[in-house]
Length: 430
Ligand code: PLP
Image (cartoon, rainbow, N blue to C red):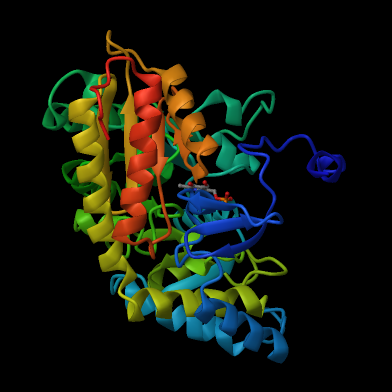
């Protein structure tokens, strides 16, 4: 039945599971036979308030009954202005104007067009391991895996890739890695992309697809200083890290470094397609009217209403504090397993954006073990994703409504999966 249903879908989508969910509630998905799955992927970081949060569903119903669409160039729907106001209360004072689009990649495209248009410069700097999306320019800015670019060359030019400070890769302390990467960046501005040609630097405050590596605060401070010195715009891609995921509204708050342009999507609207580009009024005023736009962004009222209800829910139900609390519980449980189970190399992350990186006895990335553990969890109905250039990282991104009990249940499934994949696991571990 499921296979028949798939027949007419494009084969370009890869599929992690054969599950066909017909209903979602909180952290759970249910199929037509009533089987329950624990969704710790949040649909790749989207369902921040859980599946079908009643408040979000209610806002969608009300908006759908009143106004589905009013094209923003023709007549601005009030919900667009309400959402922009709500966002301005969440972002730093320096970011108080918002452009709306539909997906993360589209918002990245908007951010880079703003940067190029406002500065009159062409070049963009990204960091090794980056993921910014699937459109051609965003693909050219994506360096986490060749699979995302394979057989799509030539990609648009003007993109320069600088090293990301991953202490393990650089083989020293975090401070050494930060020092090396900032030095390399300075060298890049001397040797490859002159400052007066460099429009912006794009960075994910926690590298997402690239392996869930939080950017050290000292590195973000260094970028801020370098950008200010050369009039280069600093863009934070918070498509995956935004809206409470890391235990703060935005991940950059952990470092105290604010961007010039903030890119948001995914968790913003609990599953409806809306993304945003935020910047100061001054910067936005340099983006001349009519030089960018789109049919749906800012005009499709239902996703905007879902975003507004998502923000209200995050705040009223204190879900960001919950993300910090449950993230702590998750990391502590995973660290406990790490101490007891061999090959389980590194636990890291912020809030509910947590990684377990697998390496073998020689310290080499262990993709086979990663996939084995993931598969064993999937077999028990626990949905987990992987990431990382070497595909040796299991990422934990449950909805922010997750409870301590649900975390503990997932940890028990994970412990069992580890025991099955590692012979050296201690008896009774987990
Ligand atoms: N930027 C980051 C950091 C992402 O994680 C993603 C998607 O995973 C994107 C951009 C692209 O977003 P979308 O898939 O909505 O185009």
